[in-house]
Image (cartoon, rainbow, N blue to C red; front, side, top):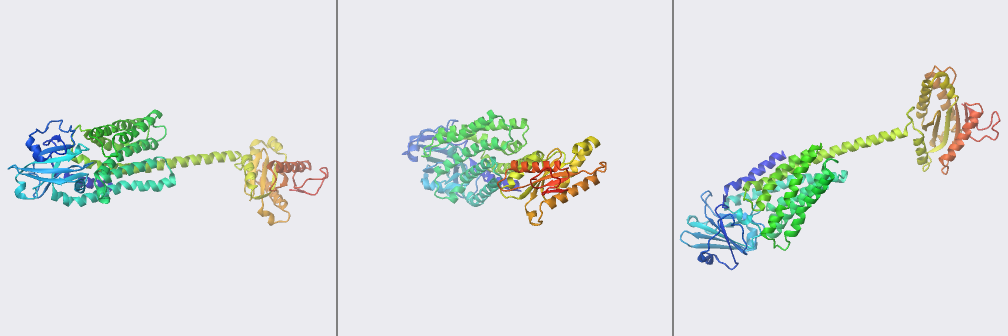
Length: 574
């Protein structure tokens, strides 16, 4: 829908250009001092240059002579139009068929106020407002002081004042609509960059901002919003905005294309050529408003290297399998072609068609829409890649923290959980489990049966409210929850007794191949905030040893004063 609206806007913008009478083939020029008047010029009889070199001018005042060809224009006042970049004082003179001269002089402020959309001046032809006089006008002379850009004369046209005044407001509204459509992706970028922070988004935003600034200035909207803006300031904006946009394009291209799709040497070339227009603009386009016609040629030539490099880079990235580059190809190829035309016309290699100027505005909107889709595509792909990476990292972390046989926590995750819990003291006791005579189970019934026992024990311990882990072989640990201590006086012994009884019963039911009961020995150690894992494990391991020594199938939770005693305080059968 936005593309369709933009195309309609383009047709409306371009249509007035076809109604004007182009004078580039009929005009002739000469230079003079600023004190030269029209009467003195005609009296001197110096011939005007009508050859291909007629734009090679060096005087402070440039005179342009055109025949008054108004046959294709409607009745009413006629005006002369051309590029208004950097203009100061001007004069327009009508010479009638009887030799009478009608003159109008315009100050810098007058020229600035008499403008048309697309950055053109519109000065009335004296006498054309009177039908009787208009029929007798044969020649029009235009005097321009301190000419800054050749298009101020090379794009000279005769136009109907009434028609352009009627079109002024609609055209400005349409230019504003183009700016609005182009600036929407900038708003999206500002919103998403704060959340996502991808490096290509600021460069894309700078591209859009520079393109909208250029459209805003060159179309004449800047003179509506800021009436005090001088034509010289407008000219500087018109030169700087494309230079900044192209520089941003280079950095955007490198950061937008997938990694590895543009070789390092080519990335450096892109950066260098993208900055060239900015450097040349800073050197030749003067802030003091004294830029020369030759400076304009250097300025436009500075865009050629980066255009060629971008063309090459798009093909280069495409050959290396880039998917994102298709958005650059779709959005930038038409603009690059039009840009080459602008460069050629800027260097005065030829005059070109007026409709191409309007086409560039349309393509800027198309480019902003296409690249906005490209940015959305890259964000989606990057998010997908990020999610895959996080998922793989999560899987690797899970594998690193999980025992491969029982799929419960392993020693690594157990040690980390113990250190993490010390700050909050979430666990009150550590219980160290060992399966009694497990080697005999493996030897008598086979390792497959032994693995089944390990998996069952691991699953049942994992089902308890405590943190369970297999730390090696047939040894398991439980970090006993602190909150449970409030429920039972003999905690954790009663809880561990129930767990052991449940394990013995479950293994007997799930592994009927084992004829004798599979029992467990448990050593228990209390955990305080100052205890290290090494100390707690040493205490629990010592008590596990006592449980084994006393005949197994025991829970020992305190140090035994006489390890040889058959039944000591702090020891209970499972």
